[in-house]
Image 1 (cartoon, one colour):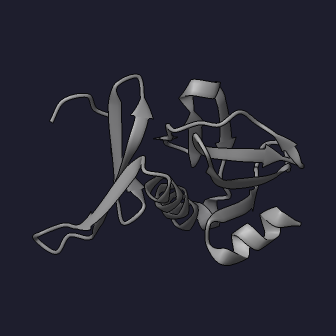
Image 2 (cartoon, helix red, strand yellow; image 1 turned 90 degrees about the vertical axis):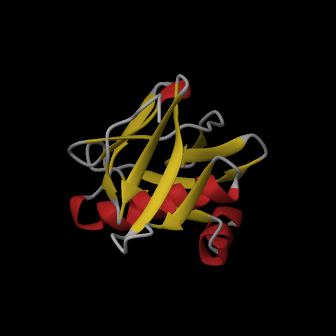
Length: 126
């Protein structure tokens, strides 16, 4: 399957959604990112919004997923890396040595960042 090859190549990821048990596969799409839920394609999206409790929301398509707690930090970083590859995020090492900062579009004119996988609140002004 192409999605499995994309995961192997590092341009996609997969995880089991905690609430439903569904297999989620996220990959780079022509319009940003796109995911499947048990093999059913969902619309493309560009925004990620992380919330407490290991929940990631996709605001523009009004869907969310609960990440497995033991993999949440790693999965958040992978989602953000995919967003960066799609042109909707960036990352850098914090100048004072406080970790890896990854910033992505959170939707509705806002951004969100994580530091070493720990989400910070969304914001609209620097």
